[in-house]
Image (cartoon, rainbow, N blue to C red; front, side, top):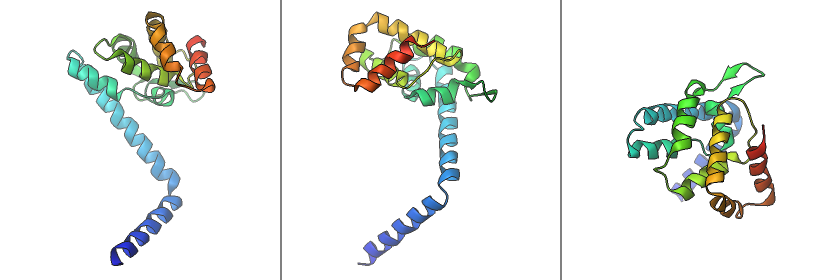
Length: 165
């Protein structure tokens, strides 16, 4: 009985603390995770002559359009640039778009997932989109196969990004 009472108290304390400070804690966690991801990507890029680090770079590379933009994009409205903005050409155009050490299905799943919800921009997003187009043209069957498991809205979103710009 004592252990379960303590768990209930801990749960309520945690829930009330989280609701009292949701924004500041959430922003710090997101900022910290983006910073950590950026550090890892920089490190793995420098060591990318090795297949092991190419795979680590791929694993750490963003999984969503939002993450891609947070790490490599810019914001014309505010004049701000993302933490890896200056590394975008090397990281995306030079390495990510040319990774051949990654299983095709894994690679295509990642690029399709990133493209969903995306929109063209003249910065790193353009570099990613260029690589995406090359890959889709290279293996259209694999792309279509992966898109078949998505709902109509997701498929439309993918093709919107593919043709945007």
